Image (cartoon, rainbow, N blue to C red; front, side, top):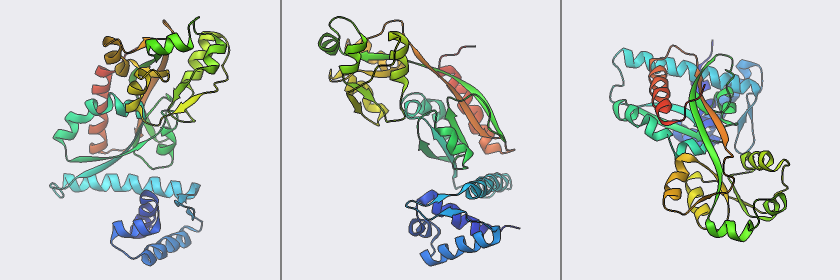
Length: 297
């Protein structure tokens, strides 16, 4: 039988990124938290935590963390059903990709958040990476481009985001005066979210028949700033239609590869729990997302 005070200490160290911060959250001394984690590992018979900076769970630790969060979610539902904590908030840990967060995510969940005592603990990563957060037990649900369900989880199709390569008219004249060729694409500065972001390479490879060796990436890990940076004329960049439309209407943006689209199909993955709170959030998110995103078979 697990001692959940020990597991709570372990989870706090992971979520807060250190023993000192975890202790502060639990209103304990750092030594007390360290002792609880050590005792939990002794009871479990294995190492649960890599003492790195920040600390990270081992594979056994991820299983323990996932179990703890699932139990805690069910306990919070039970408390709400019994009439306790009505004046408090439930916190849902959710993984979401940056482009969704910058465009449709909050319009999809705002009504639910206005009506329910729920706070979000958002973890942001590439849509191809968020599923790792769910598998590790760090979030109870995530927006991902993966369609296959994870064991113990359910999956719902949300909709598609269509991306195109944009630049300003001055950028097009400077870097592509003779059209977007392979050699020109390799020399032209292009906006990239981070080193995991490869959608621009995939679209260019499809259009040019060969993946260009891009020599001038401009890294900008902020989806909200992408339209502004592209409109400046310094770089080109991939933008979803939701972000590009205002700039197109103002004449600030030009589609550099007309007819070429990179589509990201988004899905919602979440634990398959009998949790009223998680079910309510999932239903609200899926319903609203399907009204905001492109729907395809």
